[in-house]
Length: 113
Length: 112
Image: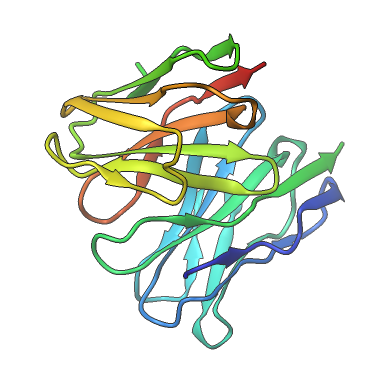
């Protein structure tokens, strides 16, 4: 079965620090990759997605992610975090047409002002 | 106005009670989903529906049932609630392509 691993469960950073959240998946075929964010008390919102093409994807709010096929990874990055980035971040993967999203366990990010 | 709405937003109930959670969407999407979120486990798919006459089990369907009353409505039922069904429940919708899902605000369910 396909699985998605987010190895960092909790991350604490100071404002202006750089961020990298890891995401690895187990499926070896063609995949679609997503990062969702859940701000405190809110629903999930899409940060960015990768379907094909340039493996470096830019999303909203200064976030980007790089798809490295050989490493089965889709890590999320931001050069300089803000207090407002405090949230839970979920990586998700789907396979080809008709397949469902499989979510990682999430990473809780706390940014200290 | 919200595109995906869920009612109720919060519910506390007792073991053995029947509970229905409702989801409505104005996005015109064919596909709808129900997930539960537990700390450290991310979101797990309970049921999904690709159109009004289509119902499919997800990863954790035991103890749950669903009804797709119309394209815009997808309800989740717990026939006899138990404490380990205490969780945050999300409804989501998507078009058939490109698989991006849009989430509702969630329902926090507590079973005592």
